[in-house]
Image 1 (cartoon, rainbow, N blue to C red):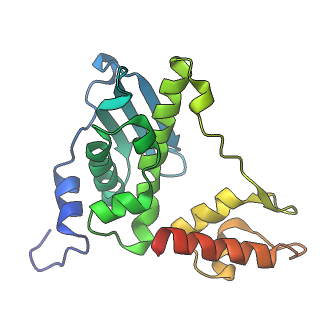
Image 2: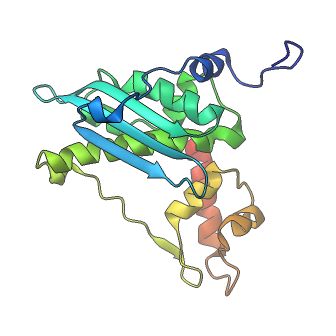
Length: 202
């Protein structure tokens, strides 16, 4: 990249993209206590995160990852892995994309969704550990609520659309096709969209 070209990300994003931390090398040799895989290569980014757990203290002692994604996804997961190491499982489970973006000194709004894969993969790895260690009762069941009955669009899909850049009802419709049949869900979907914008973007 030419020095004349302005880097549009923070120095922390640049550092974690160019020199990512805790990348998973040989997956077969890493004795993971929990593994989480989210995303889909056919649609875009995919993320795998593996953890080792200090079982006496319920603390993450190591965290490695591998991703097929953009600069923001790589930087976000790199710094997330550093944040998770040393945390209790409960603390790590509550890490959000907003926490990651703040630690990176900010991300462009249209790139916030790239940080979502990392925290989802981390929670999936923790859930996998809970399942393997017979602690299934600790897994948080986040059930999706159908908002648009006609098109079967859930609150989770509205949140994903906001993270991917939807800011108006029209953009939400373009992303999800919500409210394109009877339109009865319009008020609720707009209200939810505003809640998620406030939640993730302040």
